[in-house]
Length: 493
Image (cartoon, rainbow, N blue to C red; front, side, top):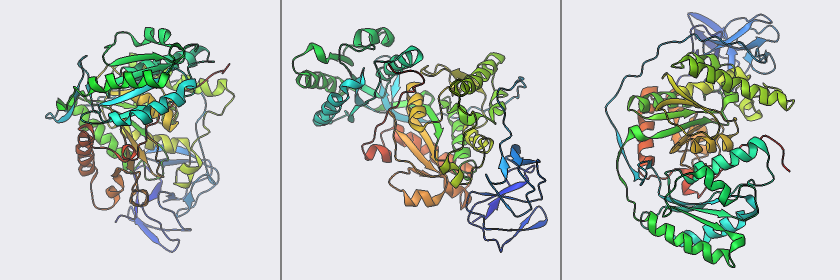
């Protein structure tokens, strides 16, 4: 097993791939480096003397400035490294040509909907219009489990605290997100559950839903009926009968839409899991498919790498707005733009936001950016898309599902049990967490520093995604986890 890695020839630090002792002497670039202290797995150490105020380089790019002189062999972390990022930046479009060659077709067994869309699950979803009816939705979910049979795979209530007492963008986002959920092809049937007096009531929400199949989408306003449980079960039975009419069929993988997100990252995330997901993205795009990258705050410091891959100047301008709008969002709430990474990130070896972002954006692979989406907007362009959403795991993963993702790939170095509205594949950056949290982790990318190549693992991941798209349940689904979170930004009345 490899003990450490210098990621880019320009780097003046290396990363420990396993714990290193202070007694060790490292042979690197035809010279010897004596470690001055223990280096935990995923953490960085200097491979040459770095003067105070000088740039610290990782991935071939600056991840911050040395607070004081850092000696060769010394641990490089938050105690001696400062972010180099400022506030708003003037960007210039310097496009680079990137090509992803077309590859032969692949297929999965999915569900073809009446509107022509493809789904990877045939579930019945209960969507509350307002948090006041969450308990009823949960009761209907529990009672409705008896309807899970044949091709009807699950009954899920997606509870949330919103739909009323909201203003401006918050209320608009709630309506858009709920409407997008209702139209998602992973749902074979949907029960929209309202109260009756809420701001985002059923009649209002219908304007956002647009055209819908009345056999697939049913509505129940609880204040209008004597026994909402009895009426709700009648509607669920009708939806189950309709959903049962669908069966899996062969569908081209070019119709797959895959979301990409990371959370609880560590120092190995940008070396193993994220690059493997990036290779997966290129592979799916080469087969005509679509991927979506989100968590905008974790692009700060690496955003120009994405901007220059935008296919057009218009997409570049949208990406600039994507970045600056989030910075303005922070400052408008009197918050520090670069108050990141998290305590868990730091424990895992990530020191600055640039360090985190350069690792995070590895998930984008090398393809051109074909689309830039606002929060709540659904994807329309095949290929790689960027999506406006925060770094919060549940909010961002929900945003990916709402944008149209059939499946979310979620890389992690620390582990997490959460789910999203769609199958959420947990990909570990290291073998330790994969083995310790085997009930959470679906795919171990840590093998990349043991006995497998990035190409081998990305091919394995692609094959696994096709299995999941064809019905194989991920660990969170086996545990019965289904989560949804809507982005709240403003005032609650």
